[in-house]
Length: 484
Image: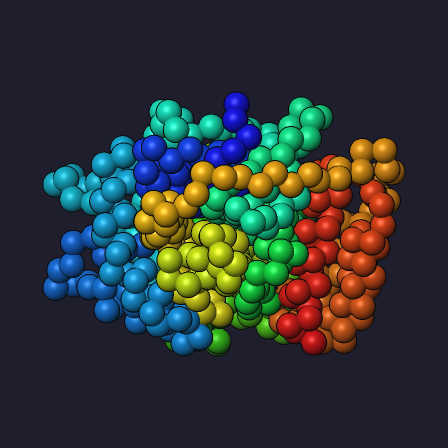
């Protein structure tokens, strides 16, 4: 395997894979996957991918744009929102060509569902495991590309901007290796593991955002954190199983501890209000009732319909002893998505030359202060494709030289103290969850700043514990710095 590449892509979710697919076939590409290739937030996406594929009298891109702006509190970047909704059909069509199997009606038309914040049924889905379907088909495509080298279970430890592009230190199988590239794409996902409870996978520690920040890239609106209102509440696991937005889209009711619907007291859109509204409503209702017991109930619907429409959710709930065709599902808000991140332009280019960011780690501005349901997979596709298009043009004038940067891995240094990540999670859960606690945020910021300084200035072995702790400390530092 060579150590020099045209492009290094960090991340094997939808954004990373789709960018590799859209780069030139003669581009030499290295794709890094922090853990196993299937472990990414993209694969966890249940609801679907929103988009106007064939505009008709019932729906059009302007309606999709309006819904996106409303959900985002009109804090969205109107230019990138316009790009998102108008190029949606192009990329939905492309992944269909790649074999993505969206559910269809009996007449062969695509069965599109409704989710909170949408005024029309425009969500393409593969039952309730759309993300896994898309990610698997993209991965199958990338694995067939002869110009792409894939490193699985490869931890990105350090990055450095060089005179010819970027160098990256990677730890795999206990060995540190440096790779060089002319262009780098961060598609490293979200920050969920900075919270005690999240729907995100284990890889979501904000590594790409941290590397970009350390190299001097502009980070924007990191405090724009979305809390999903209906995560499964078993009060036991850090990684909470998501009860998809589409369950409410198909008619499920939200109930308080007394078994009563309550959303009418907070918003006229009821259960189909945007996620931030529903999450805040649950927290306010919990204060009113002095209880954190909340439920989602779709048991009044036809049992066969529920089982067929939500096979994955049904199966996972049955493993917990809950039959969603008969029982109420215990739910509660938890961290779900990041709307801020590495600031990029409409071509996913950062403030650093030849560094790009796509997917959840990026800040395109399309989501505003609250992401509209099922716009995340769409954003990952549209802007990673645009990044690849720009890189393709730039590659034509790049020299063949590579500067090799030598990293220090601190192999003989001690490992970080135990409990750092746990402390950071506790600080964030207490100070910045749904309705922020300003006093706790101020106190938490000071402690997080101390932890981050200790990690940066101390001499510790650079392994996964160190990299992820430093990332979580940096993410928490940037979020709370914006808040206080």
